[in-house]
Image 1 (cartoon, helix red, strand yellow):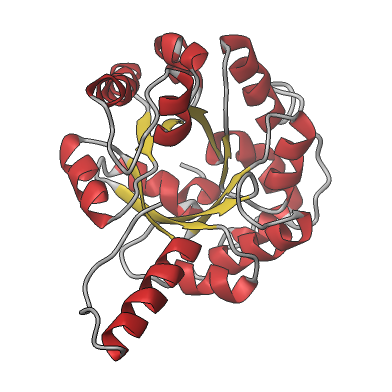
Image 2 (tube, one colour):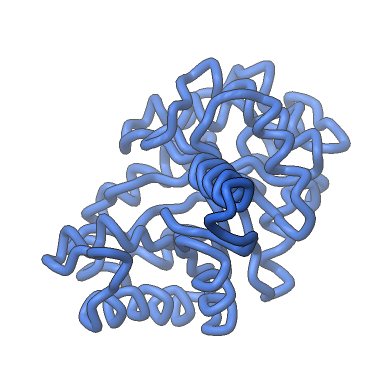
Length: 270
């Protein structure tokens, strides 16, 4: 095992076969990145450049801030575009997550974009990428080790991807369910936090496909109770909370207590 593989905390967590818990960053700022990464018990932070308020510059700040705490920075890119893959990996991200995948060919193109030649088509030249690993590899070592050290993840959240998940799963390291978009795309939207049985079955089929392919199943959870349930069910990569939602929930809760209108307690939700 290479030193870079050992320095990828999430990759190491997957090898234990235990759930790898993480947090979702949607607000920009390296202080937020560090605060999330310092949370005890997590292995990764998702830097959300799809729905989060995180642009290219903020992504470049978030990734090293997370890595400096010893947690794996993962970047969700806005769309499946090879140049976005390159930008994310060039920050030093330990892996990328690609939303709204539909076809097997898209996944093959994605994997190629993530790998240096001869395995893929990724361009080489970032002066930043190696500095999120400890000990810091040379550029030559990064070039030689990145293909086997970085994680490629796709979201199963379209009908097309769901129908092809058995073919998609063996091509990547993680298949992660986006329950909200998946529900919308199969005509079973999550309304008032309630999932239909058809959507629950679809979500479970992704976990089973990942297990059969020998890769990791991941899921976006709306709170700690759902995260615990998914851990018990055998999911391997589990989000626990989102920064903005947690901030809003905590402030609302504390103001309610101050006004004599509520009490402190765990609160989650998307």
